[in-house]
Image (cartoon, rainbow, N blue to C red; front, side, top):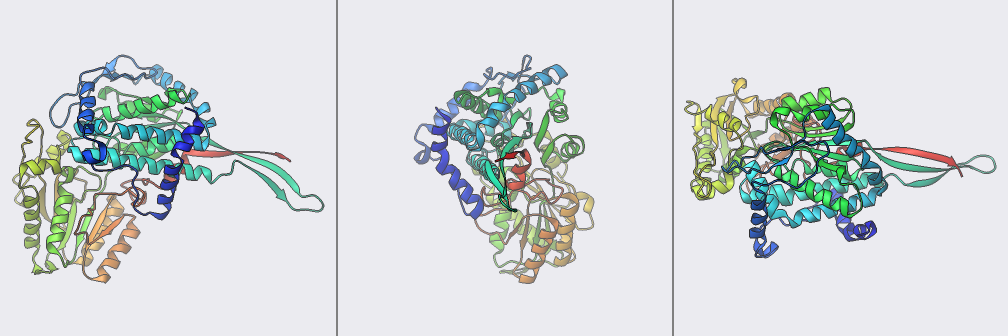
Length: 559
């Protein structure tokens, strides 16, 4: 297929996506319901069969510099995946071979132009969408997300975020005219020059995948770098390789079909002992890094990989300030779902709920601090009371670190709601836990001032709503936050909380009691993160996320 045909095929979608980034109105190009009425009667079974076919097999990818294979994945639901990928050793020779091949593929890709690169990216997204059920199973069995969430967050919503990144990248590059005739007035004939502006990629981009959201967190950076002309090395988390291996497979297929070197995008699978990400991150050829994961490694990247533009999403404290409400049931039901969704294993899940010791004024009268805690615990119990329903909300615990944090509070006398194990009817070997809620005093900062990733939340007793707002602002400024919430019927409190959120640099949700939850982020409308507090130095997705991935070189001559 000619590149021109591809550009024409995807032009309308690209224009719609760019318009959505400007209006911030609801827009989605990929249906989020896995219903057979949407995708066809056999789509789910076909996707599951495609996923099953990979298990215990050699994944057909070629990685320059690879030596042997590596299989590192075990499903949080129990089974070993056993998929064997080309292993890239963390040796100088192997890494040099990989990066040399990546750089060699870039000149032709740059010459494809802004429109050509965007069209290829959108063709890739279209092909990934065709395999969405296969991808959803891969995400489910590497992250522990329940299937519907894996389909939505790991499939449809991840595709929307990737499309959003391509739209931003296309728009930012299009701001630069290809050529102009420059005239400076003067005596007689004006000075005239022809100026040509070349969009130049920075170099090789490195995407370091995470375990919990291997596609949602990786695709924006991957496609932003690709659309701006860069080669991309994808280094997946050892526990979540398959979703990104499928991604790289599709990208390489489309590149080859369009006459580009498929080594423009490569998979760098590792033995965990190799610490490959740290080796790749400091190579001079690597000029862009996208990372989601721990604060420790994210900070190391920012402090060490000076040759690269580094985009990180790390950890933070997501805080809820409760002052008053005219819908107590709606409030606690909303928070209960936010605590429970994917067992709290989301960077956006609420952790600390600040409530005055004197209680909360509600539509049911004033409820004490203890009564509010009991209402919140009751809402969680009601939501997760049926185990068969609960597992489809909770998913599975992704690793031993999460389980250890929950177990640390077992039997704690401050616990308002104990976590309990749930047996999955289809996956009995899965580790599934309900949320724990622990009541602490605001003075006990040591307990709640560090991120407790997973299904543990703290109900923090403060002296007043004013103290709650102050501690909210301080906590985000010092430790970071991806989300924040406030509940109040007092406009002055809402204004104070919004100002605190602005000052601290964290998105704020106000009085969520319905079908919108603080830990959900809508592509094209919600900015995921701000880059304005320690939880992340970048935002998904805005112009600042794509513009540093390319530079402009000017050539000028007299007309």
